[in-house]
Amino acid sequence: ERLKAKSANVYIMFKGLEEARALRRVFEIGEHIERKAIVRRVIDDSGFLTLNGTLCGGQSTDTRTCKKPRRF
Image 1 (cartoon, rainbow, N blue to C red):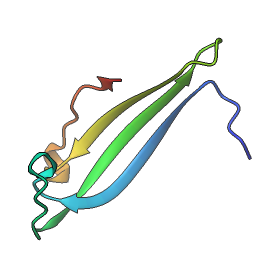
Image 2 (cartoon, rainbow, N blue to C red; image 1 turned 90 degrees about the vertical axis):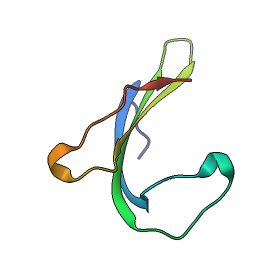
Image 3 (tube, one colour; image 1 turned 60 degrees about the horizontal axis):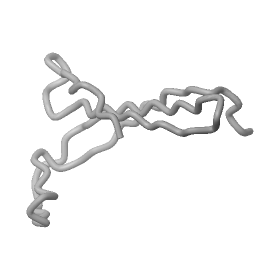
């Protein structure tokens, strides 16, 4: 069923490489670690869509921190 809310938070958990090297376009084989992402979707009254994302992960679950959301 279609989500009718104007805003929604989506929590995503995935496994990824410990150190991302996307800027260099080099993807080496390494240890996969658990990462979490939070994506917030907001649609205003005019229909304008905004996505804000936060990436959490890379640390052990005891000391996990999040970066501030980036605005696109």
